[in-house]
Length: 340
Ligand code: BTN
Image (cartoon, rainbow, N blue to C red; front, side, top):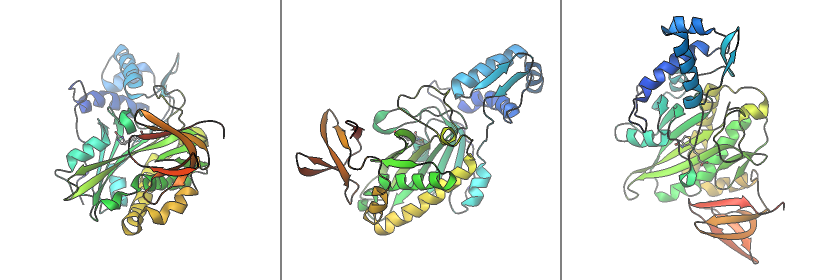
């Protein structure tokens, strides 16, 4: 079994994130149970003044997106109790898989790429917080500390590049199944791999191919799922929801991480052995926009048509002027064109 580490990294100002975080982490650990603590209590336990406690509370809110309530006469408490991931528990559940858990990292996808130089694959990288989380098409992916799931799974491509045909759709299915296993939320899939609840995004997936396709290469499967993030968290420029918002109760992040990893490993095995075509019907049964009129953005161009399904390689299929057309590629994006 590989060592499980919580490693340091630098943020974009060159600061050592672990050092910055350890101050805030100590405070968060004291507040983690969601009970009230007075400023002087916190100050005594942290060895700092009440004014310094207040400053640290502000940093926790601004830098980590964690909401802290301040009530005169009672003190401070977290708006939601925090549950940190236990690297040991995840490692025990997946004894053959190298597991890396970080408190804060730029991006788990980037970290997975760096680890590839020295670590065995497949492997999984998780983080409580990403300072440079990335989404599809150059977008940012933001997530408050210890509230959501930020995971990258490194999958070796051993059977040629056809092994990745339709992969992003298959990963979407794995995430959807995981959500269905822990909740009764009505989740659906949007091509290529968004997971939606009533049109609002609850999970996103970013796949990156690294290495030489003629030799051994790997897919970094980046998965972000909004678990316990609450309405008060701003800074997201699209309609979103979280499992906690939908269920009305916090989700066990540790359990969810394990369920996603189980589903992912099961679906990746099917993908390797039988390809996306064997799961195409299953994907279509979960397709949010089947039969809807959509606009497909292709770089600067766009096309409008009826969304009639997906092809065997995971292409999106549109009916345009009576003719079925198939499109594939990472830079494509869909949006609904009307209330069809
Ligand atoms: C998207 O819908 O735009 C894709 C979002 C992918 C976010 C995840 S979080 C874990 C991994 N690390 C990243 O920087 N991005 C992915």
